[in-house]
Length: 274
Image 1: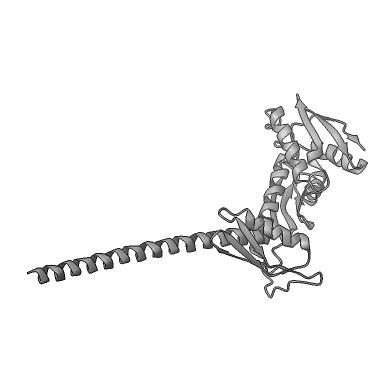
Image 2: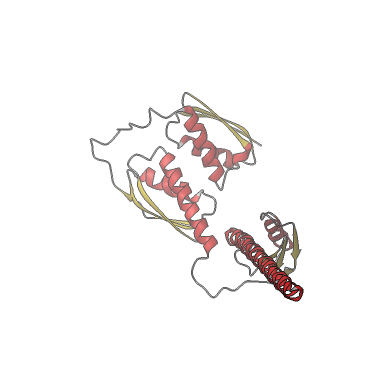
């Protein structure tokens, strides 16, 4: 009887041990899966940021994550780009340290076999198109302007119609003066508005000073020829006042021209130039 009890107890103990080890294994497996998924998300986030960066998208830099440590590999042409890659990796949630094994070779050039736009280039082109469209809609030529904007690797193509030669030329100038734009192919056709449409600026009177100030600041921010952060903008009854110091008379004149081009702006007080 006692022997039978011992065997039974031994069997129960073995079963409990097996069950416990099974639970531990299942937990460890789940933890490993969670860690693997987290690492994959971190790597994807870092790599996506590399693709979006104009300094890193044309490189072969790669990131792998294990625990809270990211390891970087690849080759770049400048130390500054290597440091940028490390800062980006450190900004990923959960990454506490970086083993930066990126090599710096001043003669390095990345040769891609694909003629298609990269993910980063496509995103940047979409952003440029959105900015150009917005700037055109904010302008005093918005009424009667039907413009379609297409961007490919920084090259902008404008198609559609403009109400006048002046509006057509300004649309091209506005697009060219946008961050990231390499060139502008202005294909807008001049189509004069019908007599009943001419002069019907129904939206101009309802524009607030707050709207004008916001759009002037945004226009400067997106401009490739004006340092928007150096200019203070205030608006009162449609009269815009610009204050600050700019590096040249050309930059000053461009800031004034951009402000004057916006809907609802009646006058622009001059800005100082260094």
